[in-house]
Length: 474
Image 1 (cartoon, rainbow, N blue to C red):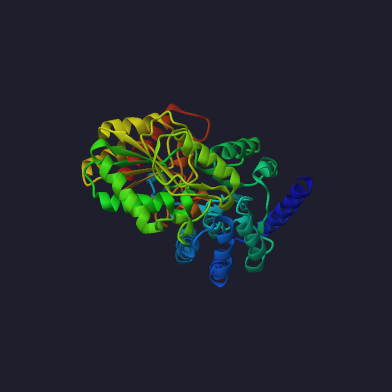
Image 2 (image 1 turned 60 degrees about the vertical axis):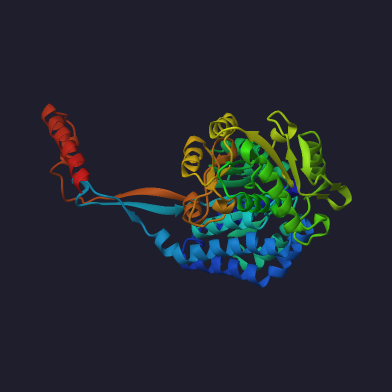
């Protein structure tokens, strides 16, 4: 740890010097770095596929679509919009500032620390990195130790493509993060579980360092109404829950199924699993593996002590394999409902009305995502407006977290702050208020100077009311 801390101190010193020299500030420099990031992903696609295959047995299709293409889209969106994002934003004038200029200028924060998570180790490291580069910051990137092959690949490749003074990769473990955060960054962006995120936030608070936290602490509910297209619903839930062997912060964690739809949904889920992964998912090239034995044991223990297995349930520890599993007859007090499930297990609970579903969701911690499947627009509207979550999606799952035009982040127990597209740029920027005044006009402003007179106060009160009226009608 001492060696690692010294290394991080040196990297931070170099990054700080580069930032203070203005190395990352120019638009052209930012564009070049973003283009280099895209080139890295294109030229080393096979290496990323191999690394994620080693870490998570991730199918090539999933790696390309949900990791590489997603990052490339973010980078290209930033490249195409960077000039507009960097322009000072004018603010409407009032009577007092008629001859002045009011602007909001986005300036980079400085040197930021980005801590990625292992479940999507490329996406969750590089999408925030795109925003930090676009905003003109220097960055120290810390991929997860759990996805070691991908982390080593990023550690190897990034110095070959990005500026060696502004951007660095360190391989600290999660237990080392608090001491690294203590070194004092200008922002910390953390993705991971609530416990580790809490420790990072506490360490950041000691140096008044702002944080963005994207946390998997709240379980993502998925309501299935009796009025919905069951076959389509089942396909979309199956894909979302069992993609990456269920190791996703945005997958549905449990289904609240209306009692009238339960039998149909269970049957449709069985059919989808057979269609997607065949009769033996362990042999399927489309199904991944659990990241390590610790998670295999934890997930297996949860599923064996909760509900009743309706589909799947097989475990092969040596292969880090847990079959895609659907649990029925699950109740709120079951162990699997007490913590996030980072594995291919989908608990089904039964409710008798939309009111019961909303009440169930609202009693729990605010989740990262809420999903709702219904052909009744009033049901969708109620779930969207009467529950609180980081994001909401109706009649599909996960996609809202991938869109460059939508902010993504948590609320309450699921985190704070957001990113993607322009929202990433804003997260890593300080919006500085700038008033460029004209020094020639003193017909009103002279009233503020001592000695204070009642007449001057009356005139200033009148002028203030005129300013409000001017703003209202212009």
